[in-house]
Length: 105
Image (cartoon, rainbow, N blue to C red; front, side):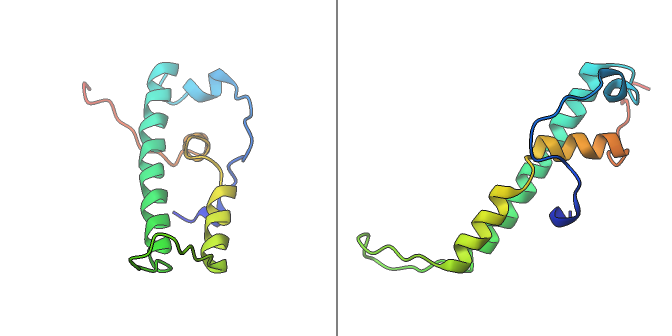
């Protein structure tokens, strides 16, 4: 997932319910699918951020020393400015990028 190329909104916006429920015919099913995708996105982002921050980790025995690393701060600021996982999931849903199927059929 390329987080720089996403067009998901950073702020909360209102969506038309009929557009959200159109692919499934049921708004609750659509929300459940988007929630599961948001959890996946959140896990991916968290893993990616942890890997990037581990590059800057300094291990020492003293708890009194605190080091500020400018690169680490920039990485953290980048991830703070990203759209939230639920906004990314809703945008993927509206763009038709989420595959879903009914296991009962």
